[in-house]
Length: 202
Image (cartoon, rainbow, N blue to C red; front, side, top):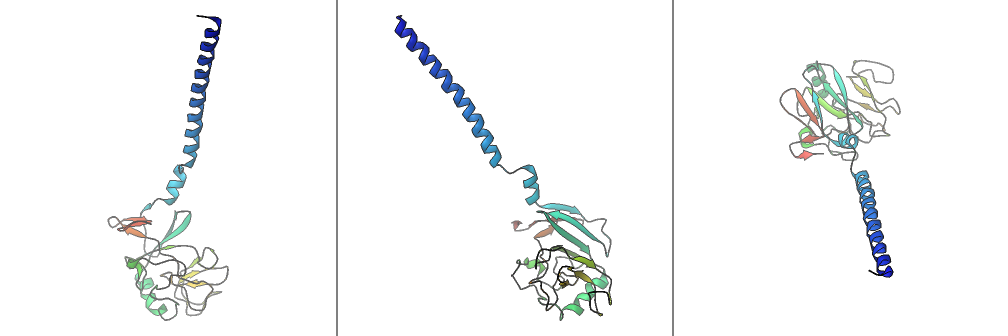
């Protein structure tokens, strides 16, 4: 083999090695880039349905869980709380949840108690006015910032919107809609799944 042929062979070998190394580096970089496009485990969890054991929830007690970064209230209503909804029917702006300004209420919550089960209220605890979180005001009767005939419910301290024990907004309040009812379902008597119903995930 001549000196010129040896030089050509060396050049070809160097070129092949360089291309191979570049290809490996390129694949590694592409793999890393593609992996950054995949949702993180935390992001997946934030959008996934949430399962809640409600077996220990007692009448009159409310529990808050997080779903998609939002607080979801689970209130086990007493018989008195359920009965109070008849009294507030005429006082709330949208008693049958027909408004869709803020969100569309699932079919199974288009009723007076806005829930699948009368005793269990499931709503997102965010006021549809400016995104504040209302506070609980379950005690009945006259109280600061509330009417004398208050039947229990929720008060948004930011601008005074009030909601009854079904999350229905009272008339002439800043909030444009009732508290949102997320899609949910029951798996047995004591397991609540938020963010999913028989029609699929929200």
